[in-house]
Amino acid sequence: MSEHLTQEDVRSIAEYTRIGMTDDEVAAMTVDLNNIIDSLAPITEYDLDGVEPTFHPIGGLVNVLSEDEERPSFPQKVALENAPKQQDGCFLIPSILGEGGDR
Amino acid sequence: MSLAFGEMGIRELHEGLTSKQFSAEEIAKATIDGVERNDRELHAFLEMTSDKALDAAKAVDAAIADGSFANMGPVAGIPIAYKDNMNLEGTHTTCASNMLESYISPYTATCVQKTIDASMLPIGKLNMDEFAFGSSTETSAFGPTRNPWDLERVPGGSSGGSAASVAAGLVPVSLGSDTGGSIRQPAAFCGVVGVKPTYGMVSRYGIVAFGSSLDQVGPFARSVEDAALVMNAISGHDPNDCTSQANNVDFTANLDDGVKGMKIGIVPAFMVAQGLQPEIKQRVEEAAKKLEAQGAELVEIDLSNAKAAMSAYYVLGPCEAFSNLARFDSVRYGYCDPGHSDLSDQYEQSRAKGFGDEARRRIMLGSYLLSAGVYDKYYYPAQQIRTLITQDYINAYEKVDCLLTPVTPRTSFKFGEVSDPTEMYLSDMFTISINICGNGGMSVPCGLGVDSNLPIGVQLISPAFRDENMFRVAAALEREYGKATIAPNFKK
Image 1 (cartoon, rainbow over the protein chains, first blue to last red):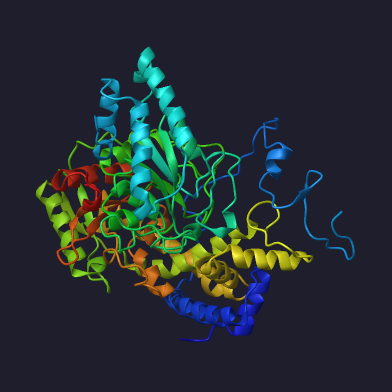
Image 2: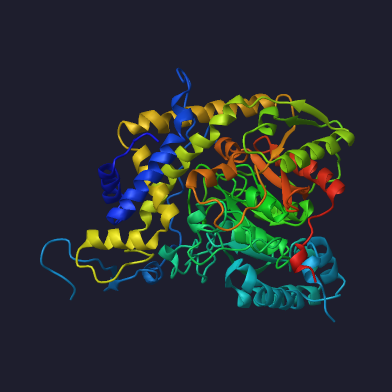
């Protein structure tokens, strides 16, 4: 197994992807990710000079704009129904600007 | 009177309703009762939608009474169940994840709505690998589904519940989704028909996204005709999914045409692939010979770039999953870990506890592969390789109408038997390249393994938007092997 990623790298990725991990979990994830990245080697062994990428299986798609007309959408109540916490018709999160907190 | 609805296909149920041998309500009640009696050991269902099924049945019975049933189409009154990544308003849509355990759909996915509009009976929501990451249904946060053919073995995945429910005769048809093999592999493991239509045949609106350029919805059934009838109901353009295409294909149109004069491609490199079990090779070769005996011409095809499909997929899939799963923020919906006064802590602990191991692996892998420097080493080349693989298939279809390959390298394995993630990924070695280029692919049963006595599937692959080709070949194979049977453990 090659070391594509160190435990420190994995810790940074965990932070970036907002997944809290214990030291043990970071160690195990480092092994798993390095193994998986090893298995991607065939990609690096291709001569791809001049080959265009295919980002999507359906080619020739063009952007279309919908008519500028009013259509029904979720009312506020429905949009909030799955919110873990809400207040005054808004999504509620912990304070992000210093002292504040819930009312 | 005890009616064996479980054994019946769409045509028999439809004829029984038309001739008033039984009512849609009787079908709904017997189906609900069958799930309640049999699913405790199988665990294919995560939620029942009995009230919706009974309401739909009443409407069908009213139409039978007033003579308008004939206008309802062939799938009216037919029970169906949905993989639990498909929104159905008012039901839980959990993706078999703690992250969405409490999530209630505020709207209905287009493919689900189309089955309801066709007056099908929605029986419930089906178990799966968490967020469709897996090939065994073992990563479900709510416990695995068992294979009806051997309860000690996995049903495959990620649409394991969809395959098992049909194989056990709990429902005649179900819907699943396929990003790298998630319909075809469990169909093969459970001995039923499973269809991954061409990308763009079926709307993805309302399906919880995994790999947006790879995901496609399709049916499971015990006959090719039943799968075709469900395809007729769910395919077509949807303004809510700009990749869905307007295609007026009747998937049943050429089922009786036979394969005489068709050219069917065989890929020699696949038949000597490392890890392919001899019993699978044997059954797939037999299937090809049967088609040849029916008048098809077998043509050897070189898909030399398909060998890079696995690695390309494990770049593209995780990158798209990383992007799609960023939406689970513990604020708008999904699991929120309680008691945090800091938003970052809330995010990190909610996502840590909400996502299982495989989901975390794919998110973190995708994040790494899209990072500066790494992008040019893996992601961009993977998209270039996608071009090469697609070109291989386009070249192949200049010579043949359809390809025939194995679905899986092996038959169903025991729970816990495959624990290494990279080994599990090999389950999809023959199915993945089809998602990468967007073609249609389906798994059709071709007998039991001589060593394992477990179901084996053969994969048929169509050019993009020519899915009727593979249905035609599938119907010809079905005439050799018979329709899929209910797993012996669940036969009445």
